[in-house]
Image (tube, rainbow, N blue to C red; front, side):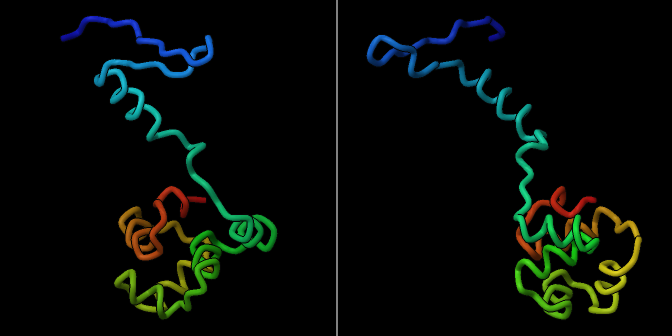
Length: 114
């Protein structure tokens, strides 16, 4: 069914309050908003560590969660020296590494991209 349907407008106190749209239209809106970068958030402490002190986002997030390098490395399935290299150099981690670290800290991979 590809028929355009106008939304149903529900009013309260004489003013529009809700719009009811077809399920397929709602799904399209959700899909297009998932890639919206405005949804990516950073706590002030992470921003300050990264932007002001020049620390990597990996280190900034690790410290935000009060994790040691050893703890985060174990959670992410890597060695502590590997994590230290990622935190202290200008290396560009592979996306698979970023996914592991993001999952270990329960954040999105986008929150680790400089």
